Image (cartoon, rainbow, N blue to C red):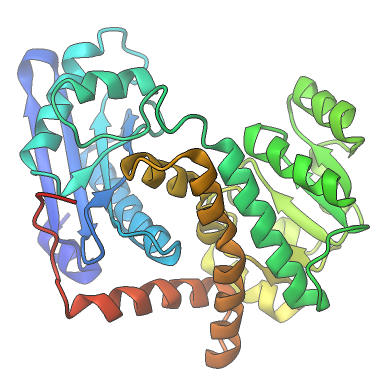
Length: 355
């Protein structure tokens, strides 16, 4: 891989390779853009096939965080770090303290948090070496309530765009997944009088949603064929694909899962089929908002008020899509790019120091 060429093409600012032999630590920290503020992004611990795969993942995820933060209206840039190795290893303190020292070496340009393969307890080890870490235990708390509320507000905005009013009363919402975010989403839907159809591979989670909110249930594969108004993917990514597109019997897609489109072309296909799609990285940005609230020492109620703004952001995305005659997923990127461009003349690069 020609790393510098990759960085130039994607407009990345920095890529740091890290190694501490005493604890067999090997990591990569990617910073995509700090126009709006310090780069925030979690630490992913994964057994990559090789260094090139790890670099590609770090770069891709860092860029995604830039767009997510910008679209959410947060004063943050995008970054990501990856640790190469077996994330099941038991001896974690030295490993994550080493990682924390490399994060500290960036002087505040990058703030880390937990991600796949890491936990809040791992971040406590990181905190022993740097203050540039978020998502700690007993601080911002469980992000699921804020994330679920943000998805709910984004769904209401999408309903307003599709049907002229944002009420979800009487709408049939097909919720794929019954985890924490989906549970909080369902609580809001139930309160508003929506009809919930839920599925999950875990029958206990499904049973809880059925018992608490009177939801109907279908098998995981049957969710795509069930008639409804809104499909809300809240579990696996890439569920909007060649196989499912032809089966969906809804008018709106709005859910909390990441990477809902298997490929970008599926976003174009949704447009052709007349399905209105709320871009995933915007509608599910409540979790990032919750972490930002921790950094700014917000009470969770303030984070929830910020997540309420997802409603207006989603409407703005649909307006850009109409203005520029592009699919909504491209309009979401454009919204983020326009915000970054509006600030770039003030200060191109965040140099660390006080926030």
